[in-house]
Length: 345
Image (cartoon, rainbow, N blue to C red):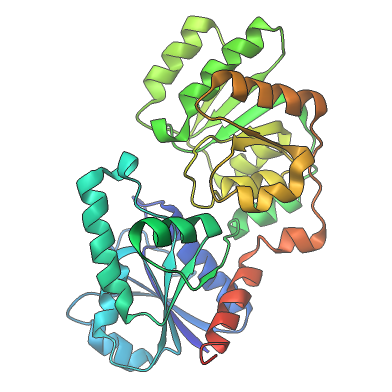
């Protein structure tokens, strides 16, 4: 089977989650004996053509590319679905919903216009997939975009291969946050919850992996209250696996996380988890109830209690082989192939 993947790829300037998804499903499809071509309109800046079959697509050459390649299946993400308008073949077309337009993040006008544009693009598609039931529900109930099925995401192959080879040895009372330092992620609330732990003489050490516009303000709070926090900055996947493997607890507090790849990363790293009651992660973290504290992300007391409970009573999650493989893209792309095979039903 020949598959075309329409979307961004990783470049020297772009490290988005959808780009990682595109490259990882390309690997996964190839592991399932499929031929894959990545189609992107990004500029030629350190695109990894040695590892992937990548072709530049634009409005001028799109029709010819689709005619020449004769794809059995095309998977599109984001606004890249616009190029499907140039495909005159009978290829089966899937649009992948990676989340939803949150007006608190994108702004009201941009969110409304983006939804209208997205609705126009997906009319060309045969099937819509969502990365979680949460993503499916939000798009359906609030935006009138109905997904046909849910295909959950996995972790990058580099992270997976790195973490399963490690001898996981936890440093007691060590907490990890990994992600952008922006208000929607709740990092300020996490840091302020440490003040409560400190007042109650509970030992902790918070590691923050990532960067973002809130970094300076967060450092001011840490300095003001003399908190035990280490800012690691942006780090490689190999170093990230190292910090996951030594951390006892992983915390992420975005209440509208469509899926949350950081949570499977934490599970594979045998971290206890503190997260909000809402978000796509609830769907699979509920299977690890003894290792997860669900908290009110707006309440510093709730967050600190969640951390305290995990430190005192939480159990380290240990995944079996089947659970671990469920977060690999070989398994995930097999599910997408099944959606394609069931297209006539």
